[in-house]
Image 1 (cartoon, rainbow, N blue to C red):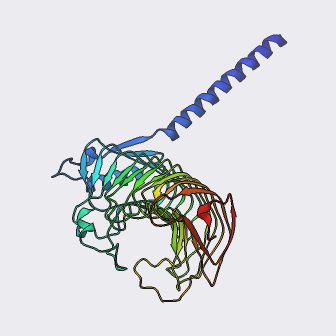
Image 2: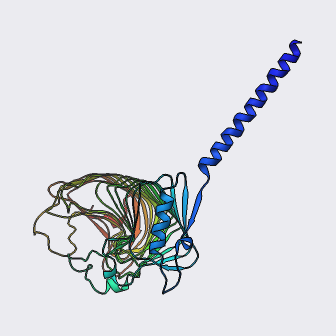
Image 3: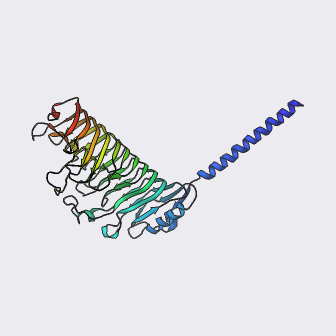
Length: 403
């Protein structure tokens, strides 16, 4: 009798466990099923005479209001797109999958804002694949950003403002009228296998710019532009740049800093295993003289390969690109705890390392370890310059004379 009762109890427990598992599976499937929203279903028309602006906005609005993960799909084709803002908060994780190409208006006057494709106030965003064609040539020929301080507020290809927990993967950005990708006040954003391209003489076309952002990773990305491949602005903390190929362009930069009031410190930047080729600067920290207060610390450049790069290792606290700074002034930005380690390759200029720090706030604890960049041109012997800096140099080579 007891054996029968025990058997029934075991049987009931098994049934209850199975029922609980099936219920959990059903619940899990319900909350994880991704819903798809194809812009063609909302009236998008491909081709030169078509457009996707209203269709994308409608698809996004419906997807954003839907609970659970959703995916807005742009099919394989070229779609004209005017300026759009894709805003949250949304009911679940949003994915924009671009299988084709989005094409910006060629006339910069047709976009009134500083972002062509803009995402804002989102928690949970993925942008996958596809191409953003900014058609920047018409904008570049109408301004003089490269030679003068005044620069029109042309639109950037992609903006993320107040976005957290985001992934941008396998995206191509080409010929932006301004910066290609701009991250402002973002948290936990990863860019992986992104390709960015614009002619080397295209003005103000920074590849990726970020400011007031934290926990940003830029990985395995290829950037060739007419300005900084990556520029890291004020308030940036816990930033990782790894495996980036840069060139043409102005190099990979911290800054410029000290231009505006109330700039937040830059802290915790790790740039490693990158290759720079034919760039006008290498890895650098730059700040304006005679202007606002700021700080940059805990900055590390390691395992960087230079190929015919001008000024491969650079701290420039006299950064004044248009020559309109006050004569004899010094930077109010404090730079400390910086490492340049295992920097190798070739230089296009005889100056290999230049640490030009603030007379008012000298750089502190700058470590230069294993810089083996060589110069073989006819402009004199390789050399380095160090002013107003507390530098610790190891692995000394001939090119580090002067430091």
